[in-house]
Amino acid sequence: MKVSEDKSFNSNSINPTNFQGGLDSRKIGQNRRVLGVINQNLVVEGRPYPCVVNKRALSERNEVCEKKQVDPGHRPITRRFAAKVAAGTQKSNAEGTTKRSNLGNSNGFADSIFVDDEHKPAEDQPVPMALEQIEPIISESDQMEEVEMEDIMEEPVLDIDTCDADNPLAVTEYIEDLYSYYRKVENTGCVSPNYMAQQFDINERMRAILIDWLIEVHDKFDLMHETLFLTVNLIDRFLEKQSVVRKKLQLVGLVAMLLACKYEEVSVPVVSDLIVISDRAYTRKEVLEMEKVMVNTLKFNISVPTAYVFMKRFLKAAQADRKLELLAFFLVELSLVEYAMLKFPPSQLAAAAVYTAQCTIYGVKLWNKTCEWHTNYSEDQLLECSSLMVDFHKKAAMGKLTGAHRKYCTSKFSFTAKCEPASFLLENNNL
Image 1 (cartoon, helix red, strand yellow):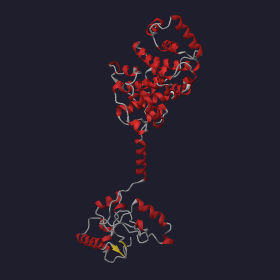
Image 2 (cartoon, helix red, strand yellow; image 1 turned 120 degrees about the vertical axis):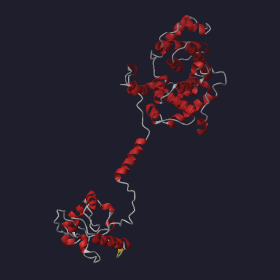
Image 3 (cartoon, rainbow, N blue to C red; image 1 turned 90 degrees about the vertical axis):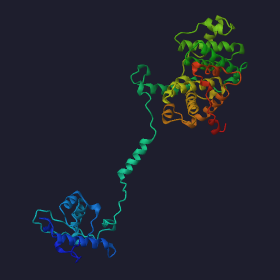
Image 4 (spheres, helix red, strand yellow; image 1 turned 180 degrees about the horizontal axis):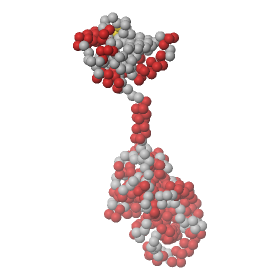
């Protein structure tokens, strides 16, 4: 700051000796008049007046000096300016951009250093206090915080096994490995979607009638869900490898249920009970002979991953309540009857049932990151299977094959079948 160039300044007003013992009121009045002139003539020769205080450059030390009634004409050096002065001092002889003025201070005050503002870049020119506008400055750290907050707001994948950490039956230590294995071997339990072409005496319609009847039998015996899914799987796998006449088809279904009960149930129905429900169409000997044929045809490979295995895991990922669980099982049991659904693997069938149940209850498409992570299926991969399930739901009460609908229309299953189908899934997929 070049004090000598402004002759209107009183040299006594910047004398450091005025700091001690208070300031003369006459000199203070002169300084105020000088500041008034400065505010009226803010620009001298096209640039801001060099003596105007830059409020951004004030430091804590400057605030202390203001408390001690420092002359406004002085501009105590700040850390930022000190760094520039220190760097410019080494080049002062060659460039002449920085001047250092050491004023004697007999009262113990540190020497004041003034910087020539005439040669400073435009961006470093001080802004008058009267014209300075405070603008919001977004630093890089603030921008980083905004980006980090966006990342935090992304939908997280929930750890669905935390609540079962103390449950030894949940086997949380290796549950992920277990389901990874199920996905690898699930194809071993799948059948060709057109295996009926090799059957000469039965067709897909007869298969549907058999499974619809077995759903009712399963309900009357009050068997576990696992038993029904394994029963249907055994029937399809057996019919894929063995030709059967139509009068033996019901026997195949009864024996498949008997084998499934031996794997899944604690209390297994006796053979005589199966004979009774078949209206004594078969003898005990025929039942036992068919059991031998079936296990040998399947090479004793009875237990395979079915849709039920995946249903339990996927419902947990969806944090399903009882209403959602019942609706998902209703939809998947409707799919068991349909021969066309054999083209979908069990895991996809289960995921589509959970997805369709969520859409039915909430009225919108709903498939979060947690469901997608644990099922390994995106929403687009489920739309075809889900649309077929909605179509089955709409037709569940019509026709002759209404076993699943009647089952889920009872109070035992909370009248789940009476829910309105998610027809908007058909509209969105133009089906």
